Length: 144
Image (cartoon, rainbow, N blue to C red; front, side, top):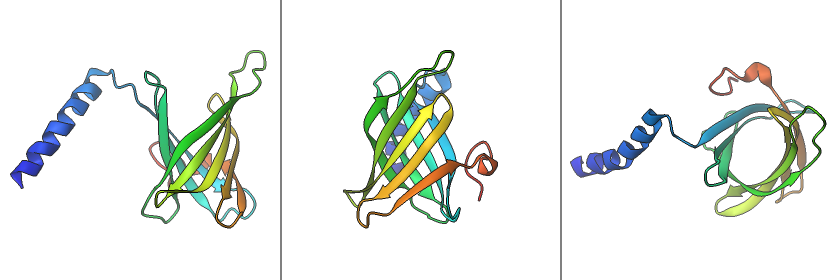
């Protein structure tokens, strides 16, 4: 048991030192979303990004679910940049379940705003559109 604790400490020590130094490059963005038509499906979308390596990944967690679903970016398209506004990006994320691509999320953002969030289940073809649910955001997670 002690060897497990030592191994964990060895792994966590560099991470804690990095976080304490304020140089941690990884940023976290999360959003609370509700399915637009029936409003019965809710999810938390959380993305981790490292600008130094241009890496990002994340997960979604559906309301009531205990496990998260991994998402990975597949492609990003750059859209318009209206004067005085940030660039618009549309990113397609693959949903990975049991080692296979089970669905895809297409997310359109401009600055901090989400203008489109669509999901397609690749197994049954069902599609859903989501809207940001600001009222469910408690500042750290989605409160449902």
